[in-house]
Image 1 (cartoon, rainbow, N blue to C red):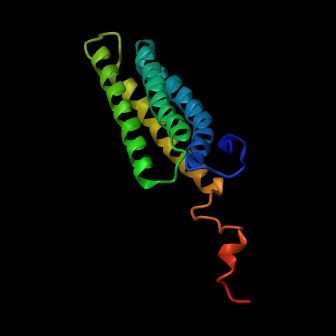
Image 2: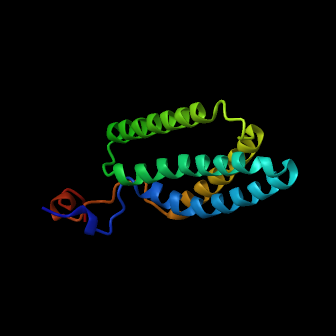
Image 3: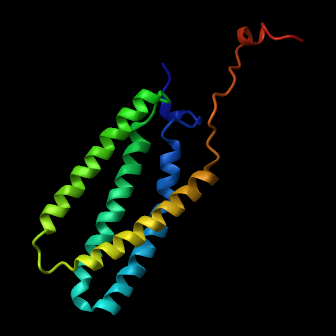
Length: 155
């Protein structure tokens, strides 16, 4: 039996790992810049909302990519779809809990939270797509190297 973790072949979750690595740092940096900008414009009371927006947005996207990169090991479309939907459901439930937790909190500046979350979302999407395009992950099955599959080919 072979151990899949020791092979150098890319697995079905490889694109998500590349996207996570490529988008995490730029999103955190852009989020921190947005936090500073929002606090300068809206005042010190916006700090809590801006930081929560940063943490929620980065946590939402990073957790999804991380889980997909770890859980999707089979290229089966059915398995991929099931895992992706389960991860998405978990993210939506987590976001619902955050919204419920801060719904009536007077110390959270809603616009600051929304602005920072929007900035992080946009930067995440741009850099995730950039990382995916640069990852060079094959989207086709490599031909088998066994002689039986070449026996039917012509000279």
